[in-house]
Image (cartoon, rainbow, N blue to C red; front, side, top):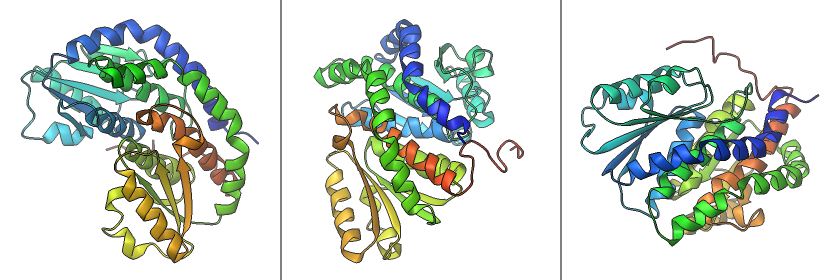
Length: 334
């Protein structure tokens, strides 16, 4: 049996290609405006929040323009939001996420130029933002987000790296164009190995997810929306550098810990955490970007998400769960 997530996972290359083709000009105009700003706010929830984390940490490794990330209600109630020469980008698959929409409306009220990135052309965010980007994914049913995740992240990278001009941004922008082909190859080449990996860990009930730099955003998505919502497993995301604060006292023999490693400066600490876990017999699951693609390491979340999607898809399958369904999301309103 194949679930909705299976088919949506396969649609990621086309979604990336179609979105870049359709929205490139609009994103370029937004980049020109952002290049003149002194501060930028990124707002999202769930998978959309994870794209904000990754984009922020990627841009902060290269540029010094302040980029801050908030969930919707954190932005709404924050008392020190600067509106002078600042901008806001909100991300939402549906364009109707209540707290993100509230943040957008507050920014509009206090005079902050706004941008929305969403997958629904008739959504409130699409209509109410000063500038709107429509991801070309078609309908997405699976709760954990595959094609909407990669297209949102691609839009954030395209906008932010195009706003600044140096050799690093030029390489990232050039390689963004190659993402559809890279993603298609990864979809084909990583399914079987991660199906086997999922079968090995199917009976485990808790996973720790570690990542640094832009990979923290992916670790957050992996734990919060992929493992907990999709595979119905307990999971906890952590910055790799925070391993020695808390988790070092809880990780034990046979406990599975997923590490995302891309050779970032901070991944020196990732390597130390991996070594520690090896020494005590923990079940390390290490995903190294260099094993999958030869691209700028700032693009790591785009690369590592594909094998992780297969891992979570089959982890859910081997436990009799549909990785696209939910028990409570959609029934409970805040």
